[in-house]
Amino acid sequence: MANLPVQLLDVLRCPVTGAKLTQDGIVLTSSSPGPDGETLTYGLDEGIPVLLRAEPSDGAARA
Image 1 (cartoon, rainbow, N blue to C red):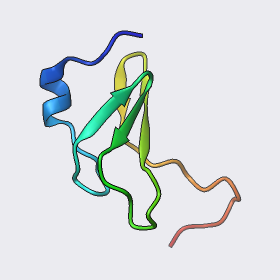
Image 2 (tube, rainbow, N blue to C red; image 1 turned 30 degrees about the horizontal axis):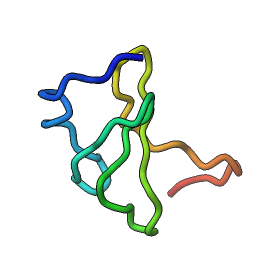
Image 3 (spheres, rainbow, N blue to C red; image 1 turned 30 degrees about the vertical axis):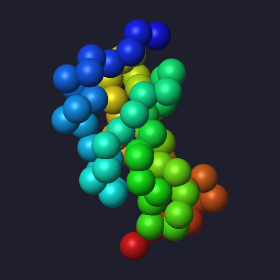
């Protein structure tokens, strides 16, 4: 997997915290922790950043 261009990483921001994202392989990581203190990560799908948070896996409905 090739790295994203530096120009793209310069403008991409975490949709939750607004912090810069860094690339670590096929994952983008927010430079600031999320509201619960956890590290926020986002995947790449065929080189395209997917800036959506994962849905809870326990099946709990969100309000």
